[in-house]
Image 1 (cartoon, rainbow, N blue to C red):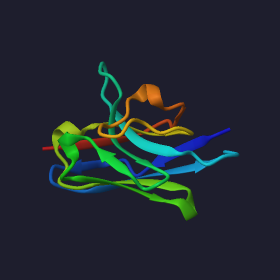
Image 2 (cartoon, rainbow, N blue to C red):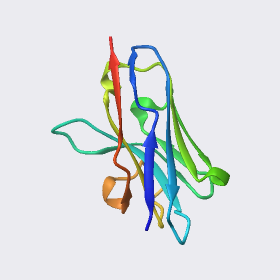
Image 3 (cartoon, rainbow, N blue to C red):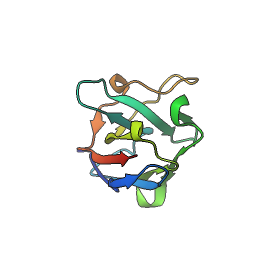
Image 4 (cartoon, helix red, strand yellow):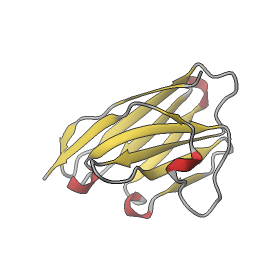
Length: 126
């Protein structure tokens, strides 16, 4: 059974940086795509960035110039490098994985992922 464990969330000042990590384990077949989603209370879980096994990435427009998604296949680890953090980046960040991809040209929706981690909290204060 696929297990995803996130880490790296913290409380930081606006303008700071964080790197989130997500370690995947327990699968019999490697995920085809992995992604980071964020969620604030009362709102939908939204995609931040995604990457497929070919290395194709998609990053949400709101963070495109500040966040980078990376995958280390050897370590079964997904990363999200977050720079120039803003207060509006405050959210719970969840790692997601699936055996299928998503249509190119947009970030995926949460309905396109079957495996989820528990999340790691990012709080940015101004």
